[in-house]
Length: 343
Image 1 (cartoon, rainbow, N blue to C red):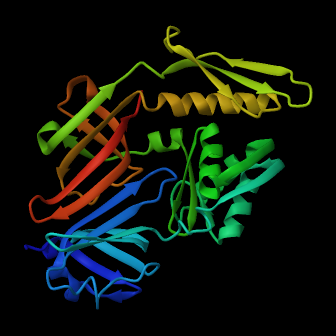
Image 2 (image 1 turned 60 degrees about the horizontal axis):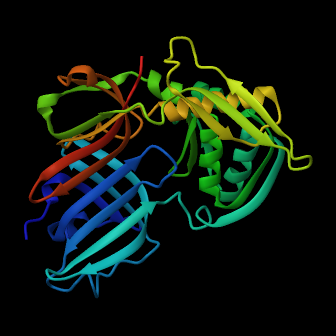
Image 3 (image 1 turned 30 degrees about the vertical axis):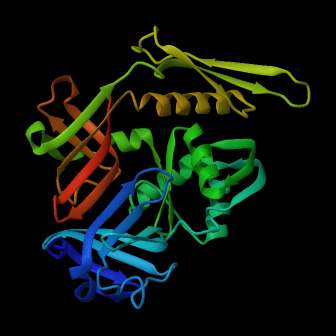
């Protein structure tokens, strides 16, 4: 079986570089990079007709795994992962090693119950960061001004009461952030928060034309797109339902539906923030798509690109997730999921 060594820069397990030893057995590698709370994942498929991988070379679950993928001079550091699942298939004999982002620990994936009262979103984030020994970062890693801007944003979101009910810590944080139009994820040892507006404002890093795409699919929808929002909150003590209605921004189509949000809000300011965030989060997916091109290490989740040659679908797009795959039959390919950035 042909291997994919020419497209692999480096493979390390438990801190040891094993590229020279294992590359000739590696028949496929796939790295999937995701913008939101879901963990990035890595999959390596090894040819094992000699039986080495299922016995003497059997990987250890929990070991760290780091891979750099691409071609000489153009590689993508996929980050640090932890071996999570090992799968044997035959015939032919192959061993599939699956790994998830090292920051997504078992504790972070354990369901918990906890109540938060009279705290900011930043206070709640600090609690989870301390609990899991993680850092809090904002827009760009290492840019202090941007980090401070996002910290102030989280500090400004006041939450009178929110209860984590049989949810994992990562799911609870992601759901809470999404209520306010904020995208949350764990990358490495960092909790990362970005507003949808911030993501949309980033400059495009490259232009891709229709003739560069091997396959593509784009969808423009009106269902589940809204021009206004209603926030409903039932007071458990007196059973009274309070209602806030947020009208659509100027220029929006009034014929679109109204988003009804059942949220635990206690003030006009909080209701306004939840309504704005919920509308932004719902409407950002109006025009979505996916395409596959020859492998490109620049195409990672969170970046913006320009697409041309596709008529009304041409314009600025945001990458939601990307998958980088190397295999003998198809070489190096990159598949991405994207959403169009509306003017």
